[in-house]
Length: 282
Image 1 (tube, rainbow, N blue to C red):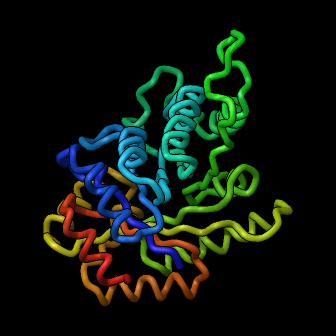
Image 2: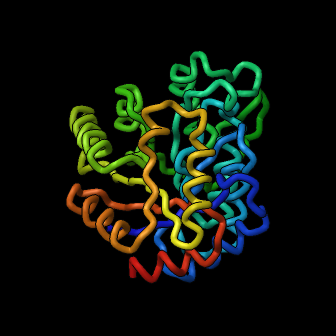
């Protein structure tokens, strides 16, 4: 079981300059991955900006968007942004994708909430073409430097369509910060979709869970605020781990389920929570 940590880019009104310091300290602490949790209609830092800052502040730790709402972006533009971050990081980025469910996250004309699933099916092919160096915009030039790789994809969500996309295009699945009993069926469904698609081996399975070890009450307040307008099934069940016992039990539970990596998403922007978490999981 690998242990990753999120960046606090989703914490309301965080001090944005903390992102590169958070990234550097997380790498020093030995975590496997740095992840973002992003929304547009919320006072935080964009996934792509946080990931770019982390890429410049670190040298070895993996980077992950967990998850970025890809259909809210023009596909070629997002493909170039992601390839650029991956290149700066030296090939450490994985693009975690979700489709979203809220109208206020979709602000670009022509990229609204309606039709986002069908749009993503086309977008995924565009990413592959852009990363493969095909010309863009009707001109002779590609959007990315020669040697750009196909950035690995993980998918988050609960629909059959999401699992089918994962099995066709991705390297694995990301489970949300819900009670273990609620996420377990999703991991089995991901494995089943993978087998039914004829893929070899097994999908990489990643799970997210929130934590706060310093200012726990602020952490609870931040999680309630972040999910205040989310679907009730998610808002009512978002889990916050606040003690060494619950963190160790969570790791044990997901190890038993065969999950490959757990990423602890911070509920505050307290830098000392990195050390507190590292001391528990080391």
